[in-house]
Length: 104
Image (cartoon, rainbow, N blue to C red; front, side):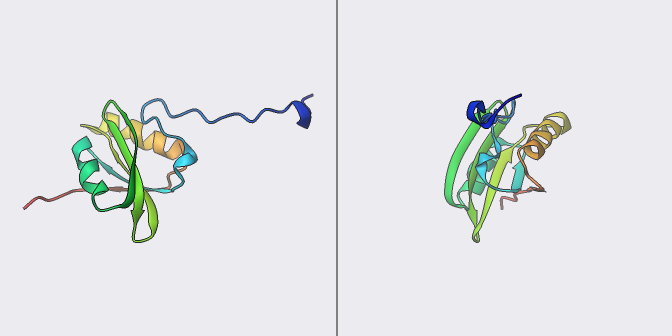
């Protein structure tokens, strides 16, 4: 039986594809396909901070109108989007918005 004296806190491992943990401190995310669109969203965030860039999954966290939000790319197609959404759920993201940007 393990006692409090020899208990070691288990550090959360990053998700294998998005390379994020729940330490990002938000439940809200915007997802886009193209990693370049993350930079476009970051330009509209206060205190935008790059977090990770692994394969097609590029992420940045910042604030918009006082709310902390994550922006992340998922690459092309449903399979990579599905992986990204599942891993976001694993780190506590509860609200996801798919963004469509229009350039005039």
